[in-house]
Length: 254
Image 1 (cartoon, rainbow, N blue to C red):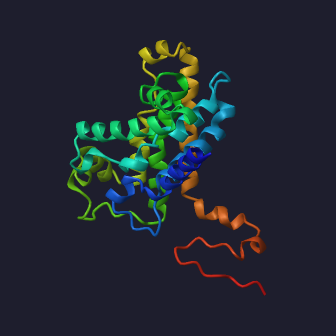
Image 2: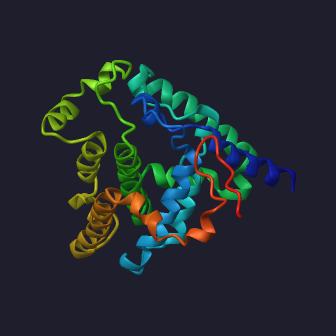
């Protein structure tokens, strides 16, 4: 069981790999999302949306994709091309990381097939999770927005992001960063005619899947404005030891 234990710790280490987006946008928060947070969020969203998706969609496969899709980042980190790393260089180091993971752990998680199928959106499950993956970053930034942790004018934000024409245009319309990502990423929730043929699904089912994701995102958007009111419903007596700050204050029950 030595390799199983090592693989567990690889996944555990994903909790130490920060998501690049909040770092690049200079989010001023005591804790920003890491890769393990992201994976967990995709699993939860998949579970929540399962009752609304066509019955033939294998959500267990979607969860397998969610678990594995960013595993190479435990070795490479969350690389983006916004910081001067070319697509070719990104692919090169990711290939090395992937080959290592396959050589060491393929027999346990079928890493090669899962990564291949997800990256190439081979099946309807991969395509659906890709769409959820895309919109997830807007969920993160809606939270940061509502906590007042975002300063889009911060000069330390790299120019390629701060001066992105689409972001500048939407910002002029009065949209916050979370709202910009919400609008931006919703546009990726769609099926082309070629994809409908590829997955052998009906146009009605394709519309159903995208509608479910968009309705969920709309609910997230509306609820994000009230997020702190959720805590008002908690039974007070059960929260006396609850610590959510970077430097928790121990509450003594009297």
